[in-house]
Length: 123
Image (cartoon, rainbow, N blue to C red; front, side, top):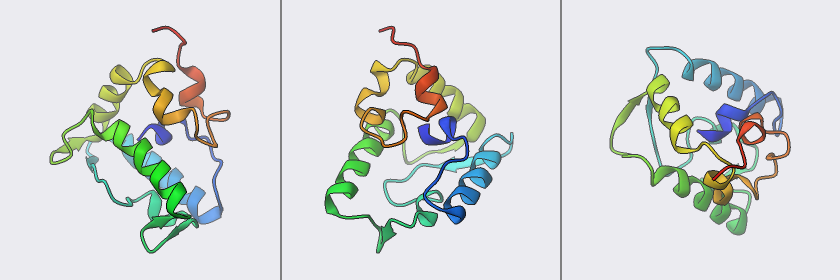
């Protein structure tokens, strides 16, 4: 979810990038609903590193799961969300670099991520 907020066209390959653009556009529509999941989602399925529901290798997969869990623990994953309302909640929960330190800091994209770059350093 946080990745969508900072996405600006970079990606692993053309298919992944095209899918991110599509998902990011849909999440901004007022009637889009989102079901959160702990397994590979609509973004992951186009990642060239995803093989047999495992991201790259065991170590990388554990890193991604840990990052996802930090976000998901703030939400009820049994509930379906209106996308616009969900992303408003995200803005309120993850509003400083400290609030995403366990999630974003070790991400390979954090230097280019608009979401991360626009967060304040305030506590």
